[in-house]
Image (cartoon, rainbow, N blue to C red; front, side):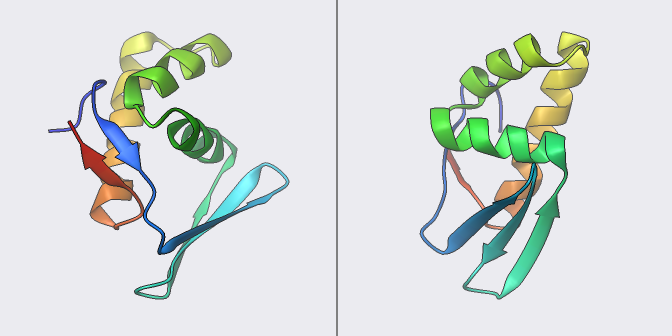
Length: 92
């Protein structure tokens, strides 16, 4: 189960490119690529920096005027999608 204590790592098979606030992720094993909007790019960057969902959540909460419960749901959903597409590995 993914929650705020979940730790995340980016596999070596995933490449990330920031394109002026939006990003592209490439999973080299499958050859699939994914686009991220500005908010998704910020979530990705914080997850990659902190390696923990809770730390990314706290930074995002300070940056975006959104109810905390909604942000938590959105971030956990985002992490779940990334994990299902093998763009991140989760533990804890």
